[in-house]
Image 1: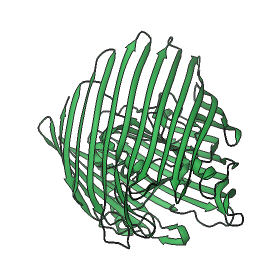
Image 2: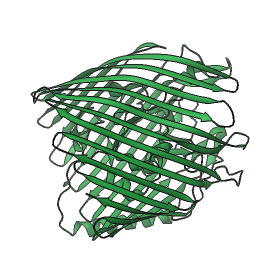
Image 3: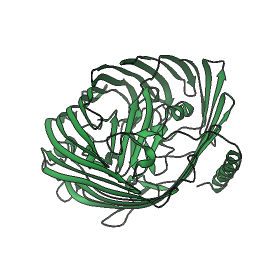
Image 4: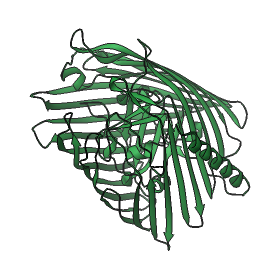
Length: 593
């Protein structure tokens, strides 16, 4: 890593702290989150670490996709095969890329074919906020939630609004968006549309041919209150074309389609009892345009929960039913398989005096391995009004996906990958504006699915050992805000002690914003340690910095600008794939409310 750059960042943080502390400003309101416990709670009451990326953060970042939003979160490593639209993986707390559950409005979008969600296709323009929960959550959401959960909350409104934006920049990038919504006392509705088109840049270090990306995203919703119930419908869709290289550097392109549709009924029977029923349908599809190869995953799900508040307890129980189909055809072979999953879950949130307890258990019945029980047990103790001690244990799993079971080298009787996690945290909050958190975590993952050269098929033969520590400081004021996180971790093969691919052992992120009247400037920095990739290919450490600015042009217009890769760092997050050089982007935005 570049030590002078890191020293400059820390100097800036010291300046921000001193400057901010000298001014009086109103205390910020506590964010309300839903992902940590499946019910609304203040983020400060979450026992496990939770970070919220707000709509203001999203607009300030000018990120082109979800991966760009996530990369400045320490302990969350991004592996990307080049520029916009290229295959992207996320490694949360050292776990595998298919060990992070991605939700849209609480609906699972990880496909049944390959496990990892296509975060590179999710446009920030349709997102209201992102909740990142670090730690095992299979007891709440089932398979894949070993490293944590990323829940994307799509845009809603509390009043009438109209937005529009046009933008462009390096690599012949063009974008446009429009959004509108309205809310009355008992109904709301809205729509958000986003279009992106870029010629891109050569994604492979072995080629000079640009690889482009086109994406059109839609998010629509409508809701109506009838008596004690609120009925709502929502639909998110991303569709477009990605240009890429195959293994032999042949230029190819493929069409993609990602969809999530849900109908929800939320009923308040009385002040102590409420119910939520969600019926959902997802589609994840890729079609290769130079051949007949494709992968497609569809899922129909029923997710129902009933909550009861009694004295100091909030009890929640429910059922989860899934019918999933996975199809694929590649290299002259394929599969078309159905999977059924049934689950029941129960949890209890208990708070009394200075103590907080969260207990959850889930029993899952899966087609390929019968039953599996996952659970969480967490405890918090408020030492005094400023200090809080948190501790948690979790048992999570990942069910083998259709490719594991029926693809090349697949085996239908694979066992689930299982993880046992422990974490300990200490939070210091001297005021509503400042917080300092220290967290320690370990995760032992067994029965990892890996290709066995002896049998020439996939088997549950691997294991991983993850140990880590995270230190985070945050300040929120009316004019200044700053957040920095330092992570030190080891993510190793449990059999031979070798490092797991694409995961840094140390990372530092710094995010600073400054309001200057009606204008706003921001600096985001990521310092990542070295990593290794497939074949023990070395990936060097790097420092990445983005500079952003928002200029108010009257009451309703803003000019936004972003300077990407300010230091013009040459780096790779996947061996053989180049990342974005120094580049610039602007957009002009209209916002009426």
